[in-house]
Image 1 (tube, rainbow over the protein chains, first blue to last red):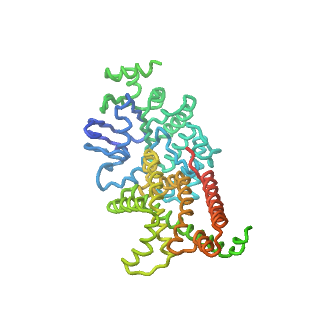
Image 2 (spheres, each protein chain N blue to C red):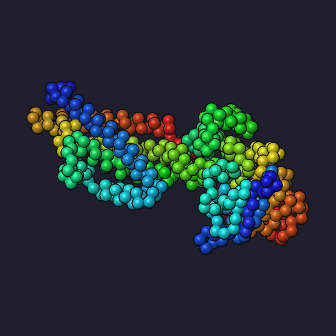
Length: 247
Length: 216
């Protein structure tokens, strides 16, 4: 069972009305793998990963998460989502709750942990992301980088089998990008399965096992990061790389 | 203090007490009903959603005095139950204020970012849990100023109950004036009392918002 991919996407199609967003994407992610998804804006990267935990629906094709079809009628989406964490571009911390409560909420209501156990786990994770001193702070009192690290702790609190990152550093000032990438790098080396939509090519090169390049709703290239950066197969990927690495 | 006020002080204080009672019951029950109606409209509960929308539109197009006449005369006649002016007044105020509060709550609920809802869902919370723990608490905190604005309006609205015979503050004042005829003194006193009560509530609202308002 363990060699079965944790996420298996096959021929996924999705439209918004008559506009196609995903046009036959197939992607398989093994346990422990770190996959970076990149590509120009509007290429469908975010939509693709939001399909994985059922935040977005799809018209045809299939997504198996741990062997369970996400789009099937009887699928218990909340249960499935608890096993696949997600980190958002704009952090999305609950603004009316303290940092600790943000991390404890789903533990209590989804995993049915006791309040004490949930808070203890929350403190543990906060120290892991280097924010032990911010336990009682409100999200509005934190910097963007700190908020994103809390968001990562919140995702980790459910002991997920994989975490999806939707442009986790795009809303951050340059000096804060580093602290978030550092946490993500540590997470990757601890063996967490990660799917990361990002433009951080340095992270992709040094941390990712594989890079998936998307354009216009299609997966144009799916290669090991070494191969992707040294010898992209397609013209479109080569053009994208030259633009994004130019500066 | 003028003689006419001093002489009638117990009666006026009783009127003030009735005003406070009417206001507290109407605010508490009206807020609960408004929250329910606003949430039903936000979630778009089938059937109930339409009923809620019709209720809000009807109330917002009806003068308060007419609403009180309906709860005092029309509904008891229609459904064959007995009521008192006091109870009919509270019933009317609750129906009236809840329609406005429902719209305030709905605005607050809609102001919560969709991506924040997604974040809650992504952690495995059900839609109901997201509503209960993430959307509602934020919406309520966000609309606190509007709520207290409606509450202050309501306190002044309770004076309308005097028309159906509740001797709350205004009703008591009018009765004293009918007997002793000191309109300026009596009405000025009443106006000042309303001002004090409303300002106190307004300040309380501001303090609550300073404490619990959502900072983003």
